[in-house]
Image 1: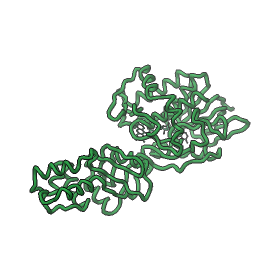
Image 2: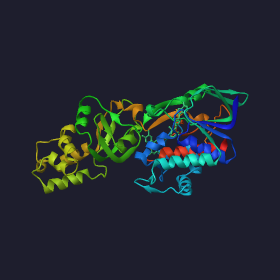
Image 3: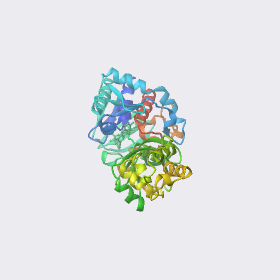
Length: 395
Ligand code: FDA
């Protein structure tokens, strides 16, 4: 027996559930499938359980992709305000934490319930714990084999996400399907991920594990002013996670410990107030104590002389050293902790309006599996909603 649908969506995460609801509203007969027993598990754990579901500062330049123009259309047609209307219709409320990041007051479970309610109201079916064994395209129709069941549809949407956090069911399914249908896949790589270090820096950072400091962290492209956190294995914290998305193996990152640009002034003030103090003591007034005591050594600065013995030119060079501190990560913590996957299904072969394949009519890719990756702070969910909405109008 073959069960027939207008639209089959593989992946019941943020993008898949939302796309199912949108397609259902348009009268399409929809089935959403997931191999996991529970839907949208990444929504559940997101934002520390409060789901940072969008960002008010959403702009195309806050997304990485080989084609920086691709996301513009979808992001402009389904905006954070559209999602807020959906939340309000479902009696969900939110608050802004910082930098435009919106979190759900009723926690992430309520966002999942909203997505499931929307799908059900739109008449969509959901089957969980179902393993797809093959996808074929014959005579303009897609045939999906799943645990002995044959499922058929004219529109197939791949919403199975990226490779981050394999223990949560992440798989390379989307990339396999893309390659099967002769799509190019931009090499997926872990993004929004902590850096690891080896040798001297691993030991040094590990000693400071748990210390956090405001900093500007830059990789080859992009500079991010947020917190930097020392960990047992290296560096983390929002500023570091953001920079990691732009980092490539073998490159340095640059850390500015005076992100407000006032390092020289603050050191001059310290010299005037306490000329007999050494640099580590002066730093103690500016940074967490454990960091302050190590910095002179790490940055190769004079720790034996009192501040009063350092010329202003020397103080300026000290401020400069703390503002342009370059270190080279050994790598990242990889898929185990990466919040998202950068790279993915090449956007060159997708319609930016509907997410439909230019190679195989009726085949769509949405959400994280596509080569569009947002900054930290709700941007990746906004991409999931926007790309799902675009496909939902097209299928
Ligand atoms: P998603 O991964 O959500 O869903 C894919 C679905 O497909 C899953 O249900 C999976 O089980 C299923 N699947 C996979 N392979 C399959 C197969 N072979 N067959 C069938 N089903 C399959 N973003 C943000 O904007 N704000 C935030 O606060 C956070 N926080 C956050 C925390 C943590 C710890 C992580 C790991 C990630 C975040 N993110 C985030 C990122 C965000 O979770 C992510 O970008 C979206 O969930 C992507 O949505 P998708 O629907 O594309 O994939």
